[in-house]
Length: 296
Image (cartoon, rainbow, N blue to C red; front, side, top):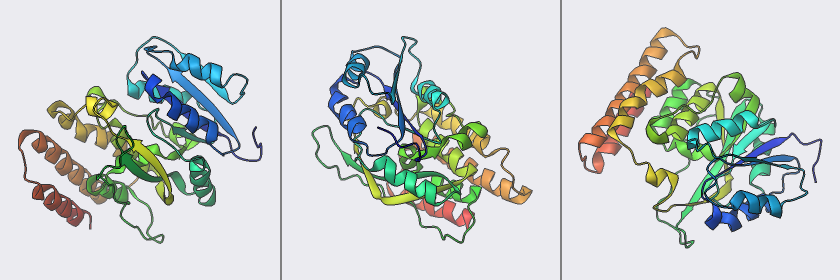
């Protein structure tokens, strides 16, 4: 079942009213070809019987452990709890409504093993609706960076302000680096954008690796967690202190710290304005170009 020579990977599966995605969950867990997994399945609300069905489906599989509670914690606390329970060299969360190819973990772990400087590796997303129809929305790959360019918080800020950094949340991470740095997900208003801000914090701490050959299918629908938690003015006001908390403490000189904090403040203020003023579609593009200029 396992290969002790391969580093242990902790695969965490947070459930929440997951019955309609049962088939996807089983396929994701049953087909992963990585040889050394611990699989932690957790349900903190008990809204259906998904956890019981998974326990029966994978009975006797020693890779699995199950966490069952009715404490109804939010998704941020749930994900953090799974990170604390993990014991592998690497860790990832696998949401119930996405589909992962069998080689997903293997490809990303191989990238991490090849480059010890990476703190995380991630791939592409292909968006579909619940009927499997491809959606026109596409996320471009991250801006290319020269391998000779030392990774720095400036690159993390550049990714946050000019790209959809949340794509990397579906990646595989070095667990010890996260725990050693206290890099747990920090709460926002209703958890909105907490995943994006956390990936920013991870990128401040270390280099991210993009694996373009690795691709998952991501489902978008009206009742998903992100759709139920739309952006709000209250959350936008909280953006800057949260981002600053991830940046704080990273070694850099005074002028660089001042520049990056200024960019984060401008970007955070822009998020507030987006909640107050219906900007034309051209304005966000102008704002991104201005932020790139500040980071040049």
